[in-house]
Amino acid sequence: MKSLRSIFGGDIRQFSMLGALVALIVFFQIATGGKVLTSSNMMNLINGNSYVLILAIGMVMVIVVGHIDLSVGSVAAVTGIIVAIALRDWGIPWWVGLLLGLAVGAAIGTWQGTWVAYVGIPGFITTLAGMMIFRGLNQFIGKSNSVPVPEEFQRMGGGYLPEIGPNTGFNNPTLLLGILACAYVIWREISKRRRAARVGFEPDPIYVAAIRAGLLIAVISYATYLFGTGREGTSFPIPGVILVALVVIYHIVTQRTKLGRHVYAVGGNRAAAALSGVSTKRTYFFVMANMSVLAAFAGMMFIGRSRASGPFDGTMWELDAIAAVFIGGAAVTGGIGTVTGSIIGGLVMATLNNGLQLMGVGSDRTQIIKGLVLLAAVAFDVWNKSQGRPSITGLLFRRPPKPGELPDGGQPALAMAGATAGAAQAVVPGGGSSAAGVVGAHQDQSTATHGADPGAAEYPPPPETSHSTRNAREGNQER
Image (cartoon, rainbow, N blue to C red):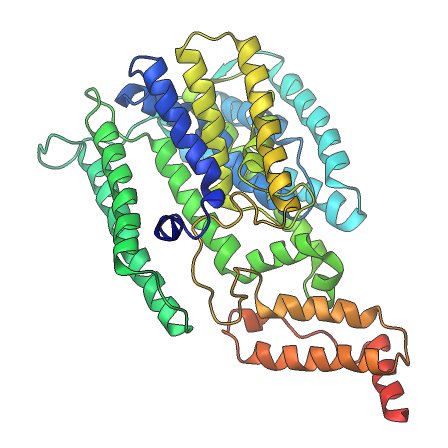
């Protein structure tokens, strides 16, 4: 059992949503007589849900900072109709239309981010207003009509990787993607062991790493076979390529950059983050603006797949994206959530929806079942946390900590310095030994921070000349 836990990252509960995804695929594969794991169905599943998964990437950052965005479907719809009309009436190239759509998303994001970050209106209220405003704009601009888009634009939302190179029996670009993914799995295991040795942790036994890598490679190889051997003219969908690229980019942004650390710091404790030098206003502005840009991009992908923009595009998309994030392990109170977990949550909902359709279940019962799954997933996660256990998927793909991070995968040491500063601010001036203990703890933490990795050191230390800290020190000197 200990080896089994090591293979799955230390605690099988962390992979419950991943296990649920596998269980759903197996169940529907049997219940539908083998219709799920086919090339055509897998391609349809990716093409039909990539835009919601892209929304989930941005939504997880919004939820981590403690807000929520209800306008993403309407933003996608109004962007789609503007781009479709521009492509039809202005005769601009498809790539200019793409840039125009991103500019529209950035403008809307600037509008909503300003209200949230600099005016102080909660994201829920701001985006609720935005949902109504942009839905109305979509119908006003398009006069409630459908507007087609050119073939070049359709490839972005529903195209496939082209056939190039020699005849190998596979689609060669799809085969190359599969080989690169397998190589990454091997490289990740090797780098994980090296990092563990560098920070003084004992790495997993070599057979555990081999089994873990072997399982992932087997899944990737089978997926490569499915997508690479479909009917002529098909392969791995272009929306899937875009989705994979965005997942990689945003995983790096949220887990490896200063901006990502700021997002989690603000979501975990806004006051402590501010005392650590984090600009909470800029962080709020970024996540709201980024969400609108991704929503605009998702809207353009959708009109490419549907070949036209219509007045009912984007309806209920925000609820699907929010459900994916919470099923993926995000916390309602903010501070917890990962891009990878949100994608798994979105795939759970997509697989559930796809399997029920293949079984001939009506849309009414499908909605009931999806709602129950969402409620059960969040309730189980809340129960897990109430027992003092980690979030279901909060520690997905757990890695050995870098220098300056907590051994249990917590935030960098400088984030703890912010919490220390928050405690120091709460001390009454002249607090005697208690205040001195806080100041001493802050000094010790500052020492630890300077010994951490350069990325963690980008957080400035809490201001030592703050009123409360200065008074506390003067009180200690007088004693």
